Image 1 (cartoon, rainbow, N blue to C red):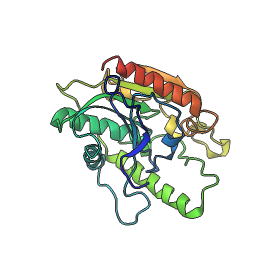
Image 2 (cartoon, rainbow, N blue to C red):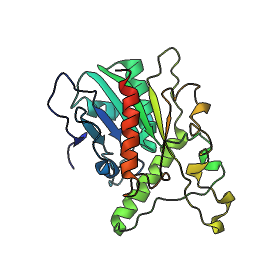
Image 3 (cartoon, rainbow, N blue to C red):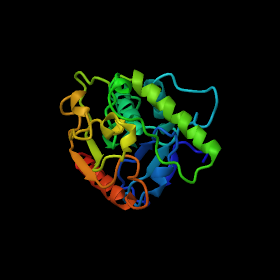
Image 4 (cartoon, helix red, strand yellow):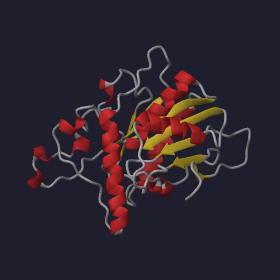
Length: 258
């Protein structure tokens, strides 16, 4: 996987019916493998994935979410120099997508973000690491030791970036249409792990907007779509079809504005 953005789904050749391309930002692991499992997102929409070019490398890292977002905007311009785009991402990817959208809204750069899809992206306040809940890594069954170590390093890096990230303030700029896809279930935590048996990623699960209402009223302005599964398994075989359907519903909501 060398090209970045990586073309996940190619649109049918039709200039009259084409929809804004979708760019899905990697989750905290740095890779986009989960997005490769998705079913069709529409024959007239080009879908790309953006992976972390530093994933699996030693000594190289991002200093901030903003730095990462600016680099990814430059990557997008390699395949689409101007025009409308849709941004999205699972978990950490949604945070980066929000930052990218704000950069485009405030600085232009020829691209116009006409919508954002947050896929079970939880608001992570600065004191997230000091709050209640259990830290739980995703299941990594069937993954070799070296890859497992690389993923764990990437997860720690993403957590550090979230700890210093401040959500952008739109102040006068129009917030783009934002849809939140929300996992219906909590992650199962062993009783022996304590902390009220709640994973940190589910700390705001009982909030309809997963905590984003604390950032800015009306940020999730195109609704919330519930989808089967928990934060970690919505792309697994038993849930990926439903996740695809939820993502298509989210995109339809955004297309209403296009």
